[in-house]
Length: 254
Image 1 (spheres, rainbow, N blue to C red):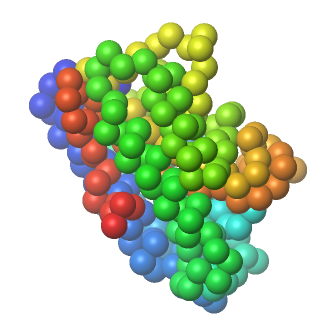
Image 2: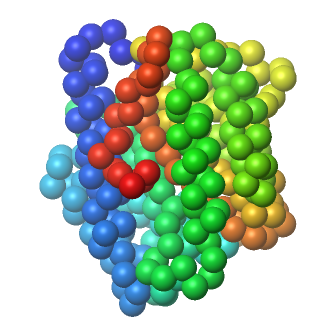
């Protein structure tokens, strides 16, 4: 969406704070021994208490309030009573929601407890790429140029990017135009960021794979060549200068 009134900006701030707070609290709540279903229920209650509705559930009928992916799962992992969190696992939580007609999206990957499996380098690279991308976004910048920047920064750290997962516009629905904010340069994609538009900028930084494939459950995605992936996401408002990071409360850069 494009922000045209102070009321619209306030609406986007409120829903963004709701998803950011939920993500932050879910990360703090995660611990070895609990199930991903317990973690999801915890996040779902926070959203409910804030008056927000789970976006993936409302939009797609996703079987959970949030997407929780572990280890080799790249994204869209289904919360389960059978999946028990373990020390050192790579975890990704993606929280998106609707509140009073406004929608926002954010996500983060992190290591649970001690980094016994050496995932932190991947996570740090993903955070760096997101920061670098957002710092360079303003009205008039070509979206594909930001994609080129993201892939270049990922390569500098020894990683690849997933080419069939992208960021997107958001605001009055979960996915809006621009529908593809990729992590690589597509020379045929001519769209530019526009001032006052709301977009969800996401990293998809991988150790070995370049494409994500859907498992038979119809939701969970993994790499075409295996390995691991880190994702970090902020919803922002594009300006003529420094973007407004609506989901800054999630603390994913801390």
